[in-house]
Image (tube, rainbow, N blue to C red; front, top):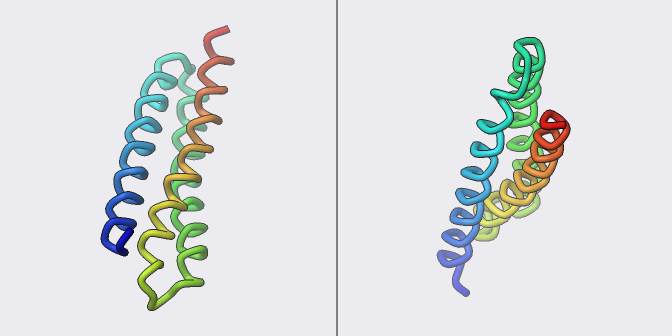
Length: 96
């Protein structure tokens, strides 16, 4: 694989994960009372900041190199997939 291929792959992987994250988030919203919706919104905003800063840290080990962009993309994908699992668990609990 070339660096361009790796960058495209990591970007596509992240976009897929991000779409799934938004889908699960939208499914969860109507199942929550207003206070829990508000808490989830605050938590999600904090999580987005954490994800991006954490992946920026990972990318930093390749700063100035060709692996920085793909490392950032794969990190964002991986961390987003973990968050999807959290939101799916919340959705399951809210549906009980």
